[in-house]
Image (cartoon, rainbow, N blue to C red):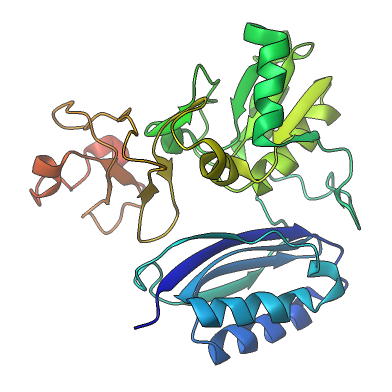
Length: 295
């Protein structure tokens, strides 16, 4: 049986007709029996797909034939074939919903005015040169960082990416505007936008981890500055980079170390609950406490 894989990718490119790209991408994915999520906007494409390795290879080849997507960086990981229940392709105002689509400017090289790209090795060189002056700034939702983050990273208390603009404009991070800041996220797309948002608000020395945590984990696994597990928005829920990964998360019921999220058993709630194996096996425990529930 052919192995299943998962690919993570994005590309900022000016799309004059994202609806036409939508139709083409849907036809391509359906013909290859691929499942997952793709977001399109006038600014480009952002996606995660799962399927047989041969089918994904064909998808990459055909997608790169479009001139705007030629330079797309596709990141591979192991799959089981059960990561995604269906194929979902949507056209939206923003690839990443920061709530500021009018601010984003894209050219043939990507986001205009974003932070300087750093490879994983480049991040280490910056830390070697500047030491504790460097701030690692998590560009993800706060719950993702509960199970994994860079050492001593600053994790803003945000539930969605739309909360970041308000956080910056509140002034609570103004004391960091003169320090070197390394933004990071899962695959790179969120920190590409976030670094631009930060620079527009007066942060002077902003970097972005090129390829995100995924590329850093491929390079250093658990022998670098990353700690814990990487949260994933698919059926796998999380990824470890080696068998030496430490457990940062704590069970919401009994405080036992864990990195496993469960979907809330309360159907009116959209939250994830961080539970240990024992509590996760108890159907009562997987129902949210009142503060989890969404009206």
